[in-house]
Length: 303
Image 1 (cartoon, one colour):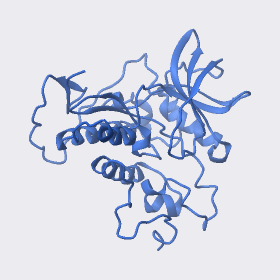
Image 2 (cartoon, helix red, strand yellow):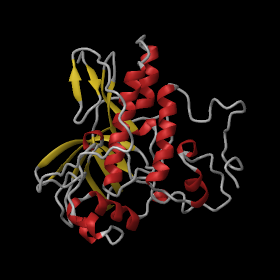
Image 3 (cartoon, helix red, strand yellow):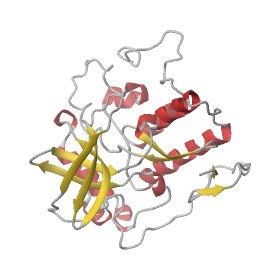
Image 4 (cartoon, one colour):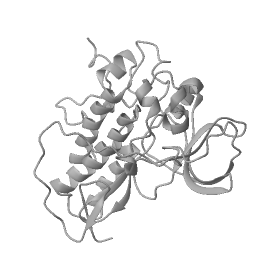
């Protein structure tokens, strides 16, 4: 597609790059959109206690970055007469907590929100706010007690590279660096997707460029979807207080997440800042430009 992506909701494509609008004064209230009564939110499967899945593994999806979710496979998932191409993720028991995982699924599924005690009465009674939904990979299926694969979750499959890889490959392919405008568009899409999660009482917990997928790429800009949200469920809570933190995704984690094992939309905001660093410095990791590179956060983030 020979077009450029412009800021807006939903995403709009134009034949040529255009100048953006003048910045608006803050704060600006967003337009509230509601989903139809027939939607399930981010969950693509019906709200049933027992769903029988048939899983056909095609190939393993290799990644250079360490992940706590377990191995990921490209697969065909079928249930209730529906077939979906998915990114099938087996969840490691070391970072999986069934009760917390099910609570997260209740938040993602519109029909179950009224039973979530942590939500306010107002939040239980409203439909999902769909502004930004286009920038989130939906969940095509899940299981907490599969006899063959154990606990797993399947996101809709996005054909393309992760954002960190895509940015580096532009250089290798001889493409010109993205303009500031294009970089802002990528940031906007990520922010819109994250605002969708926030507006619906959700958070990501592991936001980084490796968990952002590029599904449209051309000379002027990229279109993205955020994936792997809600997966960092219990790895921190199981670590002793003085554990070596270098094995974690600490470069994208704020002080509260590292010190007090707390996750929320505020910790996602910190991670978003780290993603901005990755966008503006392709191939570089947060803290990698320090005069003395930081390889282990132990002590650096101490009181």
